[in-house]
Image (tube, rainbow, N blue to C red; front, top):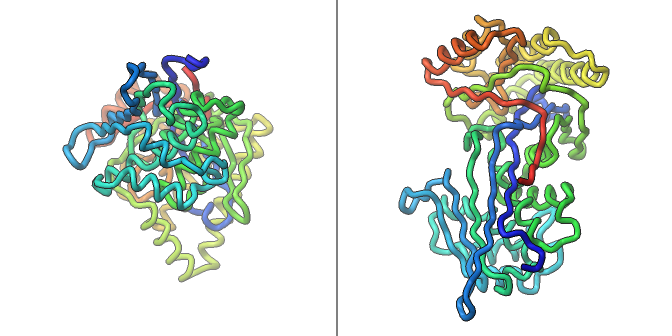
Length: 384
C-alpha cells in the first residue's frame, strides 16, 4: 500500500468572469470567480495486479466522445510506456511552469495513431499523470495499476466556463495525492502542474482559469505588464445569480480579433471604453473590500459593463434576449467570457420567489437556452 489510498477523489470548479472581459487583454484588471457548484470530478482507483502481469493506467472520460468510435473516450497505457516518457527527465524544470519540448515529443509518441481530436483530449491528462507520478513508483509498475475517471458534475464542456482548467486542476490534485511529494497538498504545487496542462491545451493561457479553479473565491487578475492575482474579500454567495448558456457557438480568438480591429481603427474611443470598464472593476473591488457592495449597485455595474461590451461588438441577439427575459424579473444580465454567444450571468433579486424563478427558467428554456444555478466565489479544489 505504501500509505496510498485505494481511491482518490478530487473535484474542481469552473469559473466565470464577472467584470472586465476584453479590457483585460489591454492591461485592465478582470474579476474572476469560482462556479462552486459546477465541477469536474477526478477519481483514481488503485488496481492490484497479479505477479507477472504488467500494470496499466486506464483513463475514462465519460463526457468526451472519441472521434474514432463515437463512444466515451477510454484509453489504457502500459506503465512501461509511460515510464519511457519520464526516463532521464526527473527534474521539475521539465514539467513546470511549461512542459519541455522533449516531454511533449515523448507524450505524442505514446499518442501515435490517435485521431487529432482524441490526441488533443488525452495530451493534458497524460502529461499530468507522467509529470506527477514520475517518482512515485506507479510508472515503474511496482505499485500496481490505476483507473482514472474524469466526469463533469453540472459544468458544461466548451461553454467558456473554464471546464478545461477545472479538469486540469482536478487531475493535478488527484495525481498529486499519489505523487509521493511532500508538497502534494499545497495548492500552489497543484496549480503549477495544472497551469502546465493548460499550456498544452491553449498555448499561452493567462493562468486565471486554473488559479480560480484551484483556490476558489473571487480573484482580481491582471495580465499586463506581468500576470498577477489578488484575492478579493467579496461574499458573492450572498447574491443570487443565474447562469445561462445561449448555446450559440463562439470563438474567443474571433471575438478578441474583432475588438483588436476596433481598437486599431479608433484607439482613443476604445481606450475610453476600456478605462470605463476598469473604473467599474475598481468600484466593485473598493465596495467589496469595505463590505458595502449592494445588490442595486452590482446590478448597475453588470448592465453598464454589458452595454460597453455590446458597443465593442461582442454582443449577440441571443444574449440580448436572455437579458430581456431576465429584466422582466428585475434581473441584470451580461455576457461572461468572450461573448458573441456563449454564456451569460444574471444577478437576480434576492427577494425573487421560487415560483417566479421557476417561471423565469421555463421562459428561458422555452427559447432553447440552458440554465444553471450555482453559488459563486465559493470553494476551489475539494478532496473527497
